[in-house]
Length: 157
Length: 176
Image 1 (cartoon, rainbow over the protein chains, first blue to last red):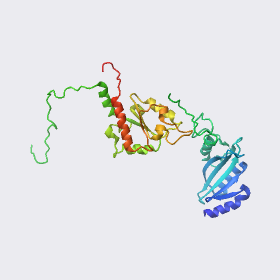
Image 2 (tube, rainbow over the protein chains, first blue to last red):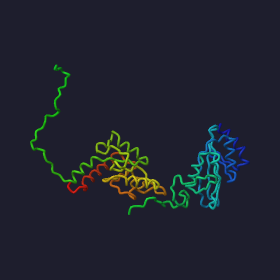
Image 3 (cartoon, each protein chain N blue to C red):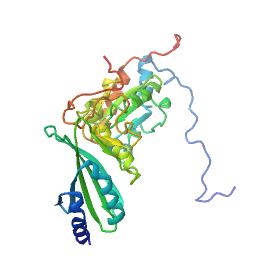
Image 4 (cartoon, chains in turn purple, cyan):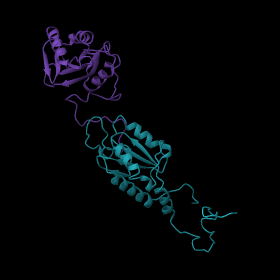
């Protein structure tokens, strides 16, 4: 079932969504930022990918488009997963938000904003969720110093 | 009254003792007396944040039984507790909470760092983790281990008891 669904998906999506790669049973698409929301809408409405699993990012410090934002989706009907990769630049790490399609995207995009500083256009609540107010920088970026602490309580002397 | 084999006679458990002067007075030092009383009435407040909680449950439950040391009854209000057991990793985000709990406890109070994360941060050294609770509050006894064995925790409690017993206990009134 999963294999058939993925075949159909691959055939139908490849012209629109660019190159696809089957990686450990998960279909992975590489998209341009503008294609993200239309592609996700098709995934949800036409292919039954009803669960938004995760959004995270990968930091490639040497690359021109430094951040690779990775979305994962799951279809409970087909029992299949899909991965979408989108590259954004360090100067403008902005990507369209998915809160209009999946309500659960709000918190996951907040976490991604905490850790990597990706700005999700359309998500109006990007307050820190795992970090705290006043934290400077984004700790999972490769250029964040590994041992840099930002304590909230002054240390005893 | 008819007496048979099943009737239990109602008599005092021990015969009334006479005052014979054998044990009328006890001489001791004030600090030793108060220390002896305090070391067997530790009321722990478990500040439990991570997986060491499982070991805390194990050491509290019957096979190891911290009740034998007078330290069994957790108080879930810091105002009623005098031993703060910090069990698990403390993050920078949670450090203000720990400090507030510590400041709410009444004197006299003691702190046990339970497990290596509370002691020194353990294997964490990153943006999130406080590298040992002694950076923000004073600690009386450290119990390392990931997690510590119940024997180590009991040893820590006994070392804390020894520390309480040999320390000075200033009491409010001049008369005492």
